[in-house]
Image (tube, rainbow, N blue to C red; front, side, top):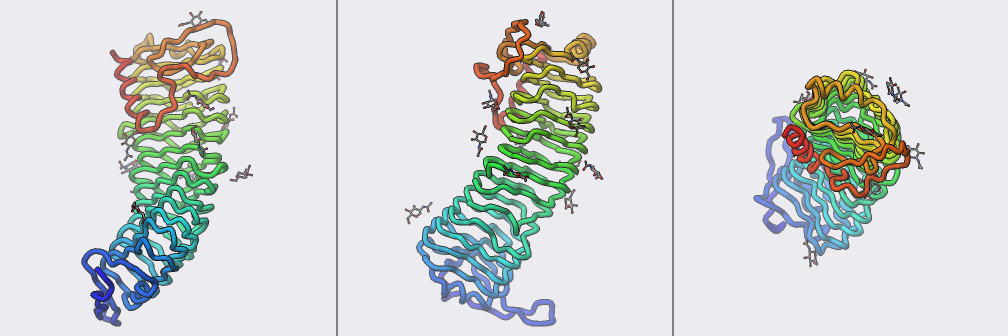
Length: 400
Ligand SMILES: *[C@@H]1O[C@H](CO)[C@@H](O)[C@H](O)[C@H]1NC(C)=O
Ligand SMILES: *[C@@H]1O[C@H](CO)[C@@H](O)[C@H](O)[C@H]1NC(C)=O
Ligand SMILES: *[C@@H]1O[C@H](CO)[C@@H](O)[C@H](O)[C@H]1NC(C)=O
Ligand SMILES: *[C@@H]1O[C@H](CO)[C@@H](O)[C@H](O)[C@H]1NC(C)=O
Ligand SMILES: *[C@@H]1O[C@H](CO)[C@@H](O)[C@H](O)[C@H]1NC(C)=O
Ligand SMILES: *[C@@H]1O[C@H](CO)[C@@H](O)[C@H](O)[C@H]1NC(C)=O
Ligand SMILES: *[C@@H]1O[C@H](CO)[C@@H](O)[C@H](O)[C@H]1NC(C)=O
Ligand SMILES: *[C@@H]1O[C@H](CO)[C@@H](O)[C@H](O)[C@H]1NC(C)=O
Ligand SMILES: *[C@@H]1O[C@H](CO)[C@@H](O)[C@H](O)[C@H]1NC(C)=O
Ligand SMILES: *[C@@H]1O[C@H](CO)[C@@H](O)[C@H](O)[C@H]1NC(C)=O
Ligand SMILES: *[C@@H]1O[C@H](CO)[C@@H](O)[C@H](O)[C@H]1NC(C)=O
């Protein structure tokens, strides 16, 4: 719909004063900066606004406080700046994709958006969001040059997906819960993921993270995965359950990790995988872990694995270490007693330590050389989605 059909109308709001609202069916396209300033009479804009691909100047949308639909700009190599001085709410998506030189995004009053969907914003380094967005169902930021997320501090969200932002070294939010999923992957080389208030989440996946804090986390209903991170220590001091709705706890290929501590964890509703963390020499941070509904699948260079409270593993049980390994006697008793139901393996001095279903060759040499786990058929650097499936497959395999 072109701008000339847009008719600002006076509508009584709250009885106290009149406020203008404008309404279009569908999407209004802004073809020039003047089209945007013409919207200043619309306190509430009912409909969506799209910025044209060929528009080559800064766009300012003054006066509009609320857009009921989407605000969209895609595939524009010319636009340097988008601003909206009064905009508080975007009822739909704030969708920006492939805007090569966009460097200014000024939304000083924006607090609420249904979805932030930003991708391929090669010129965007910071946000001018003074009040800050606190509420969004979806936060999806990929391939930007953002250095911080200052201006986005969500209290409530369903889905967070923050990947491939190479300069982003600080991801910190006040979130209390994540109802669908959180994925953080391949951001800055020294990125922190700090969620001090997060109490429960559905799925969460962290990759390539250098510092992490999940101090308040109590439960993860689905899966929790840590892959290829740089941190040395992983503490989930308050976490009691993972996978109550069937989900795995996966700690794989974190090359500097030397201390894993989950002091309150009692149950994993899927599989537990701790694999190929080459600096992790002892696994003793699970003093209360009693029940694992899927497979228990650990391999690496450990000298000792202890799980003093373990009383049920429904899937396969596998511990393979390249080092001389202590702790197998206790697990052997659980296998003999039937507490471990699936196929059982526990031994050290394995030449190429690997996962459930592999054919480990025990050298007995006592070698403590670092494992690379390279040749293993099912060596585990797998995405979370696959890990979930493999956990189930492994559990079934163990029971057959
Ligand atoms: C982006 O714009 C270019 C040039 O106008 C066009 O050829 C291309 O199809 C557009 N891509 C998308 C995804 O719209
Ligand atoms: C989710 O977190 C928010 C913010 O901390 C809180 O207000 C809300 O009650 C939480 N919802 C649930 C279901 O836990
Ligand atoms: C993230 O980790 C993966 C797996 O190790 C690696 O291939 C990728 O290069 C890493 N990305 C960054 C940005 O470090
Ligand atoms: C990485 O970030 C942390 C803070 O999050 C900082 O203390 C540390 O110095 C940084 N390291 C490097 C190498 O920049
Ligand atoms: C665990 O949670 C309690 C209550 O929510 C909180 O007081 C405590 O500080 C948390 N522990 C850590 C290590 O953050
Ligand atoms: C996840 O678990 C929390 C706390 O146990 C619960 O409040 C929430 O409803 C669950 N969410 C889903 C999506 O199952
Ligand atoms: C094991 O972890 C290292 C990083 O420490 C990684 O380079 C390698 O690819 C991982 N191996 C497997 C089989 O996942
Ligand atoms: C691992 O971290 C926990 C919690 O901070 C600590 O109590 C424990 O001593 C650490 N273990 C090692 C071997 O450093
Ligand atoms: C393994 O650790 C347990 C508990 O810390 C200890 O009792 C046992 O002696 C250790 N075994 C070996 C072989 O180090
Ligand atoms: C474990 O490996 C040792 C050699 O280090 C071997 O003697 C022993 O039989 C193996 N045990 C099992 C259960 O395979
Ligand atoms: C949670 O993760 C599991 C296993 O990776 C996957 O099957 C499931 O689809 C994920 N659910 C959501 C809501 O992301």
